[in-house]
Length: 361
Image (tube, rainbow, N blue to C red):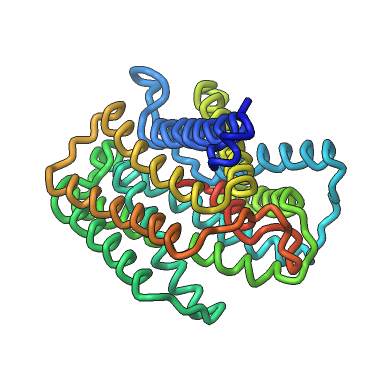
């Protein structure tokens, strides 16, 4: 317990410190597991000898992920007695879900062609399409430091891509040349960044004016995403093939379920972190998690990086930490624990919802 003297001196209470530690462990731990399993499922074969084969059904992973998140949202709404019925017209949820499904599929597919460090570093450049979409969709304006940070991220990513290997071990085994494979993977990451940036910006515009609980949006966005991904799988006849694969290789289904559980837990921890401590701590945790993901991937899956690529990595994360520091200096951020009167909950909490839905960060 903290004493009145500690409180007067501005020393955080023990319960607050424990909450912060819980948020860090919850967000970083769950999303590190998510990242490791994502790479394992998409880049390592299942089975042995003649039965060895790769999992190729990215949309099946998306569907599984969204179904688990939807079930968790239903349970949470039942516990807190929240509104289950859709608050906004269903087509608005579906519009956000459609771009989110495409973005996440591009993210998974990219791992067939580029290494996980490339994918993670590329995701750090998400702020660039978000700024572009924000300008055209919401007429947002950005300051000089925003452009400087975006430039730092872009230059760092460019150095990383130009001065070292970028292809995954899975992609390298195909008949395509390494250059073609890497370019295809980078194109998929471009698709991810474009659609994910659109999702983040478009949802703000679509859901403005609705008194909507966080978990209500989580339920219906994930429901629509599950429906869209199911139709996608059935339309190209890959649903049966995906089910046959996980029946033949039960470990693949186990990995997919743990991946979905880790993603959903990360999403809940993200929402709690933003609600309790605001976007500044959340941004710091997420930036640290991305850096740790790259380090862990290099160790577990043996991705050698050149010294130029490490310089590019340091540039990217220096820019991102700079953004966090400048954001903290610019204004002391109030805790967004009171709902935004226009949408029913904090705007940063709404952004965190889609950040955790990868998603991924």
